[in-house]
Amino acid sequence: MKKISYIFLVIFTLNTTVCGALEKNPMSLNPMLNKVMPTVVNIRAQHDIPFAQHPYSEIQAGEDNVANKGSYVELGSGVILNAKSGIIVTNAHVVHDASTILITLNDNRKYLANLVGEDTVSDLAVLHIDAKNLTDINIGKSSNVKVGDFVTAIGNPFGLHQTATSGIVSGLHRRSLNGLNNFIQTDAPINPGNSGGALINLAGDLVGINTAILSTGNSGNIGIGFAIPSDLMVNIVKQLVKYSNVKRGLLGVTLQELTPQLGNALKVHTKNGVIVNSVSPESAAEKTGLKKNDVILAIDEQDVFTADEAKSYIGVLRENTKVALKIERDNLVQQKYATLKPLHAKSKVKEISPLSGITLMDYDEIDQAKNRTKGVMVTNVAQGSKAWLGGLSRGDVIISLNNKTIENLDQFTKQEASAVKENSGILIEVKRGISSYLIVVE
Image 1 (cartoon, helix red, strand yellow):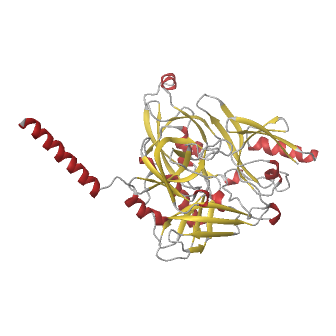
Image 2 (image 1 turned 60 degrees about the horizontal axis):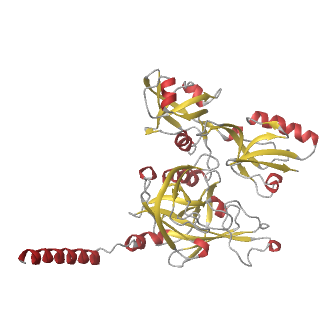
């Protein structure tokens, strides 16, 4: 009997201790959110152009968006990165071509924002407001994020003020259309209006900028959302603040994952890294001495495990940046240094072309199924241009022009010139995601 009483006393004591602990430290995100919420802002962007749905846009429904008024309003979110300077980061698609950008803070103060710079390739933009008593967010390292980590998305979904949703990181290194973003995938509900908002960890550190959702039709959130990693965001924002633009550098290689089978065939001892498939003539890679079948182990002392990781890292570095490449060749580890060459110089399109207003870059990728796609990728399409009206979108990979195969910019330029002489509509075949589409530009 004494033994039973003792056990009851112990259980009662433990329950009392646990309950007391819960009262002192409630299992709630509220204390952390109270610190972070003031760093997230709501954005209302007025676009004084004929209404047209951007493929990633989050348009506010209502009387503002009437085609005959020649304008529409787009809602989004932003994150304060520097309170002293009034610097805010958001998605480029939220504010691109906006005539007026209105910022509403957590305490309902409102300010007109200036666009410092934007980069449509990474879908990031930097805004500035002249305001005092701002709160900026602590930036975490997205490279430390793991699948299964708890995260919270904060933003302005459907125009609702300051909404927080929670979930976990459900995937990493999710590839964007242009292959430059290694998105963080989360099941924390992200809806229209969340674009540009914060994805934070349990410490309240910014690990991503919410940018897109995977949905079917008008179903909204289905549990698959994507965020731009904070590490990538920091590099882009630095360029936008300093230069108001992003000018990417080009290494000049195509890469492939190192599988056990390839490692055995090439007699490579390392298990990590990416294989150099080809080296472009007169490229930074050729100048530094990179060769086919070299294995890149690290870039700037950061280990590389996939081709997407390497491309994403190089893809945010500015032209003329010097990068350190740790490679393995003939079972010997070497250190090489390459200075990235300008990318934009070979991405110009003649203004006389019906396709003027688009920016292109060479595209040569091998997917996980070993399928290779060569062509030219559209990195930007000017709104109102003939290509834009024809349905060409950023991220499309052009693989043929008037039924002629296109594998690089030189072929595109030659075939484009031939199409201009014929003075007729241009039939373009593009690869968009895993599907192919035909587009006519007249």
